[in-house]
Length: 344
Image 1 (cartoon, helix red, strand yellow):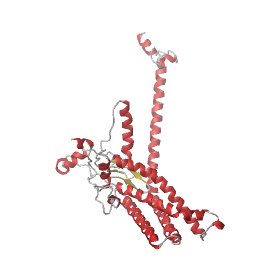
Image 2 (image 1 turned 30 degrees about the vertical axis):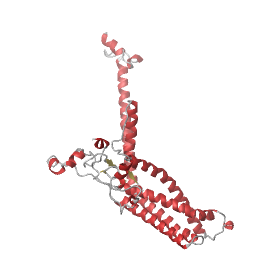
Image 3 (image 1 turned 180 degrees about the horizontal axis):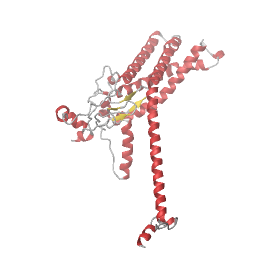
């Protein structure tokens, strides 16, 4: 009787289903129903997890295929806007500007174009940073030395390489990346320790170049957008189409880069990556719920944070804008200074 009473106290048994068969109390059958429901729920969760994993694998394949096409598209857009600027906009400006001013405008345009292509090439071709191989037991003391301490001997279970602090595994590149920020399809490469400053400078020069085209091409864009009878300049149909399209493309890219570049400027000044930004946001919310304060351990102050990315160069010297002349950032991508080290 006590056994039957305990079964009856269960929530599923209070439903009152079932009857007495083969000496089994009628309250026991609802318990079997609950077990069946839980098993079906677990199977559905496993199925959903498998579907999500399949979708993510398909997305990685799509990014791997689209990467070269995105690079080709970016080069074509830059080349198209540059062609329109130097062959259509500049010749029409020669009638309204003096020769020295026109030469300065052409020189500035060439300077921006060269820096855009240089930083874009470096961001595409330079590897973001690959961790060293994970050492065996016999090699830990002999070969690693201090490097083993900074790596903390963590190993990635996917690529089997060492996994230092701030390193993450890229599912598209199929390897871990030092100080990984994100995988960018526009450069068909990961953005990490080695090429992050080139990626930031590419966005900076591209935004300046687009703004330059928007400002100098605005009068000609108004002429191209107006009806043919009201134009004060003679523009061929093809030239008018090139000017209109180049001006609109430059304006859209400039507005998009203002948002993306502003976000990465914040990341540089706070010494975070995009991945760490989301992790710190989550940790900050969890700490506030506990009444605590979360602080980014790599935030060394704005000047030091800036030099961690662009090297030990003065900000107002503007040498950091020319990476072929500036000093490279210090470090090997495996260990980074922390706030605790400064206080110690």
